[in-house]
Structures are given as C-alpha cells and as structure tokens.
Length: 504
Figure (cartoon, rainbow, N blue to C red):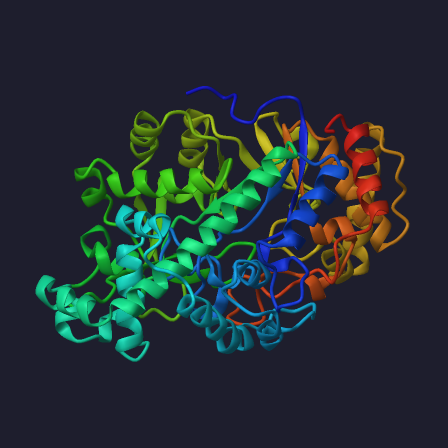
C-alpha cells in the first residue's frame, strides 16, 4: 500500500466536536454556528476540521457508546432549521434555550425529543425523498431497535421479551405493523440529521476544508449492531457478553480501562469477507473525508476481559484480523484515507501493521517531555507520515496539564522544550503556563508530520475546566462548549502560526 495518504503540502487543523459549538439550545448543532466555525477555520488557514463520532450517544453520553454505529446524533439536529422548514414554531424553541458552556444531557433528553416528536407530527412521511430514505434500509434495524426499546421500558435488549430479544421474524413483523409511527419517527430523526450534515459538509468542503471523523473500534453492547448481528460478537447463547473490551494498565489508568464493549468474533467476520466492516467503513466515508480509526492496535491484537470483571487487570491479548480486513475494505472501496490511532500499549506487531498499511499514525506532544531521548513523541522522532497533536480529547488541555505538574516536573519540561524551540526556529519564550502551552502548540506545527492538529482548547489556552474527557471516569465528560465563535484576532494568530510552519 502507498504511504501517500494525506495530500501535500503540509496542513493544519483544529479538533472541536459538534457538541462543543456555541448556540442557543444547549448543545452544538449542525446549524449556523457550525458554518460560522468553518468560516473561522478558513480565516485561520486551517484545512482540516476534526470531530468525534457523530453517533447517537447512549449511557454516559459518550460518542464511543452508541445505540447504532452508523447513526447520527439527534441532539445535533438544528432546531432553527426545522423551524425554517415549517416543522417547528419559533416560540417552541425556547423550551431548549440554554447558552451555557456545559452540555446538560439530562435536560436535553427531557426537552429536545419533545420538539423532535412535534416536528415529526408535522412532517409529511409520504414525501418521496423520505420514502426513498426508508426504503434504502440503512436505518431499518436501528429504527426497529429504538421502537422496541421504547415499548420494552427502555431496558437493555437482553432483558426484552424472548421473541424480540432473539429477533423472531413473525413477532418483529407484527410489532412493526402495530408501531409503525414510532418506527418512522426514528427514521425521521436520521433523515433530518443526515440532510443537515450533508449540507454542512458541502459548505465546509467548499471552503477548502476537509472533515476528519472518527470510527471507534468497538460498538456498544446495547445497540442495534449487536442485536441485529449477535453472531459477529463473543456472546453467550442467552445474548449476554462472554468477553468485553478494554486496555491493560497504561499511562491513562493504573488498573487499565474496562470499556465493557463486546469484542468481535473475528473468525465469523472473516467467514463473511468482513462485509459488516466494509459497510461500516463505506458509511464513514460518506460522512467524513478522512477517518481516524480509534484504537488501531486492536486490529493487530486486542485485549479482552472476562465479562463481569471489576477492572481490566485480568484480561488477555488475542490476535486480531490484521491486514486482511483492510485489504478486503480497500478491494471493495478503493484507497482509504485513514489515520491510525496507535496510542497506548504499542508493540512490534502494531508497528508492523501500521507500516504495512501505510496509514499515518498519531503523535501527541503532551507525552514528549518525560526526559527519554528516545521518546516517540519528540519532534526528532516524528516522521512525515503521521499526524501530530498537542493533545487529544482524552488528554487534559495543555494549560491544565502544565498547571498540574510539580515544580520540578515543570522545570524539566521547560528545559526540554527550550532547545526544541530553538532547533525549530521558534522565537517563543516559555515564561509561564500559558506561554509554555502556546509554545508547545507552535512546536506541534513545526514537526515533519504532514498534518498537525490542535484541540480548540489549546488554541484558546483554556484550563482543565474545558477538558473534554477523562478516561475511566463515568460522569462529567463530553460537556465542554464554546461560549462564542473565536474572535478574528484568534484566527489571525492561528493563520500566522500555520504560515510560519508552512501549513497554510
């Protein structure tokens, strides 16, 4: 495979999830603020906008736990757009009014679906475009799953009546006939999401900006994915998990991370020519221009933990599909612009897989300052075929991270950073936490990677209160929001930094 994945010349981008956009109604949406942010990126000379998974979130509000891996998040549907289409009245939108800088998912759940159902009640389900969308079938299992979930008291599917849990065809057909309105509501939600997303993507692409999306390795247990294709996962005969996913202890967690997702039965996937994955990848590339494959190392070897374990310490490594999956996908779909998320526990097998695939890997500067001259994240050890980040959605912000260091740790970091800045020809002088954070951002732009990406928090130099996610914690995550679109002065400074680094 070729190693020319991200197009020359060198480019820069910003990471900000849709949920983090500002706006009137409690969470970022696909409306005017998204276009204003794209305008900001264009003014800043950015050619990539990276987002997290766009899926409908479930337990814990995580975009890495969804009721269906191909879904769109109903919370991202822009209410003002629905009002402009005559499906809502402007005065009705005040029920969701919330300009705060934290997403209140409980309030959203209670309020936004009320308005979406009201919009559906006014929607003509006989329109040809909608009928074609339903006939296409992508969201049949999802809509049926969601309708069943409502009828079964919102319980996990393993607690449903046996005939629904095990997908008895006659029972499902009878249920669909009796509950068609509920089924069509969930089709409508996806129809509206994808109409709005496609319009936004066309706008962003017209500005010369590509969207980097994210495809998680795993899917949620209580999902239409697992319910519709249980044979592709390591489940017991009663549909309960036998093994669940996670990672062993690492620099994120001393007891590892117990994600709880069901792991794949890779032999079953291989027997079907990886058809399920090919469909999933095809859908991802209808949403995004470039796709970051989360937890890429799991395709070489994956870590599975007995279901019911208290933590991830007692898990075992198992062999993944390796290149067979990607070769099947590229045979079916052509060359794919993937980014391999290779953070965490990396061994020779993962390195061989990344090299063979040719996909650019990830480098995170926040991990570079431990004093080890062989640290893979030091600029001298970063090659062109990579994507460099100051930090990711799982990291503290640079300002938060630097503020958390002990005095001696901070002094060591600055001692390492100063010669790196000099070697890169960067005139920044680390004199305090914010100036040091700014210097690390400039350093990220200077490395050899074809693409460098800064989280918006590291552009704005905000603290830990704006962190997006803390791994291995069950609450308080995914809530960060901008109060407003950044000022033109921020765009100008970002463009200057990108130009100096040859990235704009």
